[in-house]
Length: 128
Image (tube, rainbow, N blue to C red; front, side, top):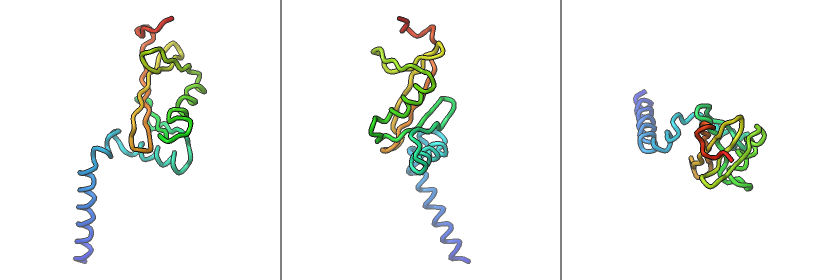
């Protein structure tokens, strides 16, 4: 019984040390469960894109996609009726009298997160 207690205490110490050392990586997107679920869906289930958060609207894609890491995201937005634009200040989508800008960032070496931000149509200086 004493051996079991020592093994449990050792495992608990290793887990706590692991979390302390790698906490900045594990919690870089906040709650790690949606990110882990997204990685699982892409890797095991073979989905090209997974929405991991609603507010802000956040997607995950595999960074090593042959057509470009953002291709599944671009295709999804096109299917939803949005028009991709790029007018010098950076890429954005237009649809429903609104503009949506998006930010790409790497979560790990193999996965990218795309965060979508809605902008007010009237205040955006791109009316042509």
